[in-house]
Length: 232
Image 1 (spheres, one colour):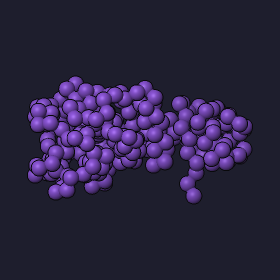
Image 2 (image 1 turned 90 degrees about the vertical axis):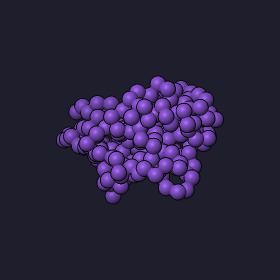
Image 3 (image 1 turned 45 degrees about the vertical axis):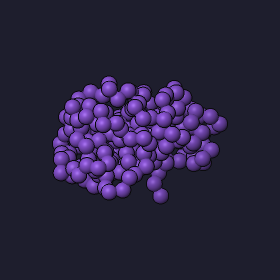
């Protein structure tokens, strides 16, 4: 059985956890004094910790040995994903964290049915990224950025945009030695003008197969072609 895993802002000899992390350890994982667990700071440092005191809303840890670890892709991967209906964006953030995205950027496109991302929802997406990073033992926590209008996307060194009706495949163009940007559109798809704009910014339109994927499936399929398919 894998040891429990907790996020801490900074690894120090003595660490106090409160709020969600303390609640999860005490009420969900039933951690007690003397239990050992792994702690990580989301920046590439991990350590072994022992529970010194566990009481409602508060856990005191003693951190012993620490070490650096990397379970990240050779180069950073940014996933641009259009705003989606319902809770689909949360599903994308969770899966994208597991698949190795370093940064997730919600974008506003012409055909987005949802037009804004509230501060509360953004904070929730960031909590989901944190929880997913704990579960899959990421060494870094992906950044979930505020909403970005598509025209403000900057030029990229290597980018791929999922687009029905094209024949180019990711594997024919992808280089693991370059930073990568991936982009998928909303339920209504991207306009022809938007795709042309993205091509000018360095994105290559690629196929995800002959079937039309749902807007929440496409970003995970595209990301999988890079990380899972390449063993990253």
